[in-house]
Length: 77
Image 1 (cartoon, rainbow, N blue to C red):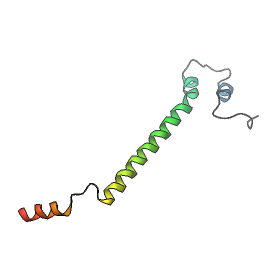
Image 2 (spheres, helix red, strand yellow; image 1 turned 30 degrees about the vertical axis):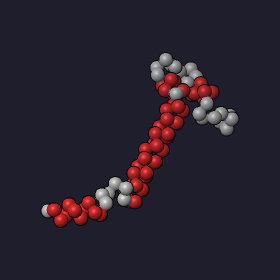
Image 3 (cartoon, one colour; image 1 turned 45 degrees about the horizontal axis):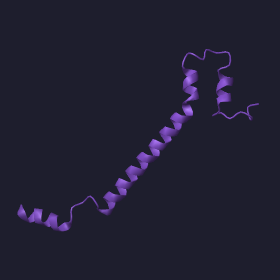
Image 4 (cartoon, rainbow, N blue to C red; image 1 turned 90 degrees about the vertical axis):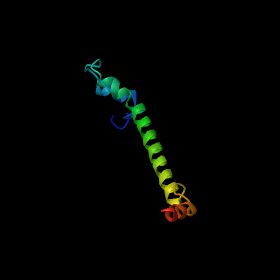
C-alpha cells in the first residue's frame, strides 16, 4: 500500500490523520505544505540567480570606476 500512495497527495494526508484531531492545525499545515515548499524553492532559485548575476557583473568590472577617473583622483591628492 505504501508504494501506491504519493507522499505529496491529499490521500496521504488523510491516511496520516485518520482518527486524529484535524482541527488542531497540523492537518491544514500538512495540506498546504506543497505550495509553501514550491514557493520557497522558487525564492531560493531567484536569490541564487541574483547573487550570481551580481558576482559575475562585479568580476567583469561593471561596478568599478574607469581607470581615467581613478588616475584623476590620485593626481588631485
